[in-house]
Structure formats: C-alpha cells, structure tokens
Length: 269
Image (tube, rainbow, N blue to C red; front, top):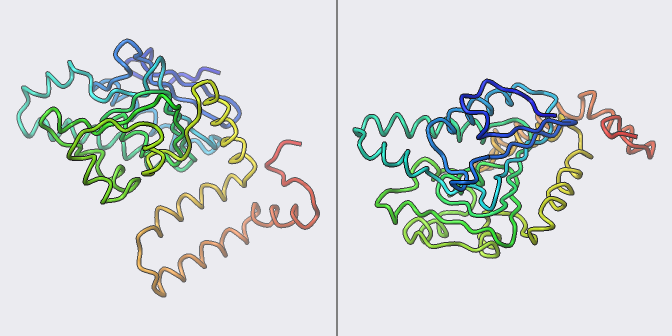
C-alpha cells in the first residue's frame, strides 16, 4: 500500500506501508538520490510522522537505482556556497534535525544499502539501527575532498565506527568497499546484490518474532545506557526497566507462551 504524506515533492520519496513494515525509498536515481533542501524537509516530515505510528514495527530505508545516496545535490551545494555563515548554520541544522528524527525513531530502522553511500548518505546509514549492504556498495566521507567537513553526520558515524577508525576516514575521504565497511562497523552484513532483498527480509522476519513493545524498549534501553558508567544509578535503572517489562501484559504473555510451548500472541498463527 502506498501511503500519502504531506510532502513537498512526493515523487522523490516513495513510501510503501504494509503489515507493520514501512519501506522508504529515496527516488532521485538520475542524481544518485542526492539531498537537497526539499528532500531533507520531506524526510523530516516523514520521520516525524513515523514517530507517532505505534503500528509500525520496522522502517526500511533504501535508494532507487544503483545508489543509496550520493550525499549533497550539487545544485544545493552551489546555493550553499553563496550563503553567509549564519545561513549555512541554519541549513545544517535543518539537515541535523532530519537525521536526529531518524536516529530517534522508536521502531527498528534498517538501512538497505543498495549502492554508493557518500557524505549524508553515509550518515543516513549510521543513523539506522541495522545496516545491510550489497557487495557493490561503497562508502566515503568525501567532504574533505571539497574543503568541508562531515559535521552534521559526525556523531552518528563516530558512534558506529569508533574514534580510531574515524580519524582515518574523516581525513582521507577514501572510498570504503563493502567488506571494509562491515569490518569497521558501518554495516552489519554484506550480500550479493541479488540476495539483498532476501537478506533484509530475513532480518525483518526475526524482528517480527519478538515482542513489539520489548523491541522498542530494548532500543530505548540502548539509547539511555550506552556509554554510561556502570554505577548504582545505572544498575538500578536497568533493573527497573526489565522489571517494568516483565510485569507488562506483553512480558507476561511472552513468558506464558514459552512455558506453554506455544507462539506468543504477537506472532501470526
């Protein structure tokens, strides 16, 4: 089912909505799904709408054609070159707000990287919870080749690959092949192009076996606990979170189903 949202340029952003799984496809294949201010605005509108969708369990993000996203649209970048520093800051914050909206979605997000992911496209990938790439995919933080820096996307990229790896790729702008991308943590798995859809479908199938509330709560737990010192406050909060989930209707149903050797009620019979 194609769902309609209030997008300024809907032809550039395809949304498929079916059975709790939403697939968002960047659809500007003629320019390798590059960003401009309109696409950024429309993605932000879409992600904000998705944040309130309790019925959506997985959001898949991918690109049409041979690229995931080549980063900034050249025409958008030309316009930015004539802006003042303040105007550039406002422009960057709009991009940052869109990335933040994706990163903070409550449901599981999966990047299906079907091709090149450069700059902002690289950032989109690292904003997602899970990333799966085709063998032909490549990545680059190419901003330095243009005399700029990967500022907006840097928190998400550094979180994904770590500071040590970031030192190299931020400064060289080199292309990163799919195998290397998996090694350094950009993506979780790499598959031949013809197997990419099936590989993502398998991961989504595994997610759908889990309690919907538990998956969202696990994602929230990661966001809250990651990087914190393991002290009494952190331990008590973690214990409180599992206690809450155990006592919830879903937690009780999951345990009962396990003990009774049956499927829980969130799995279709």
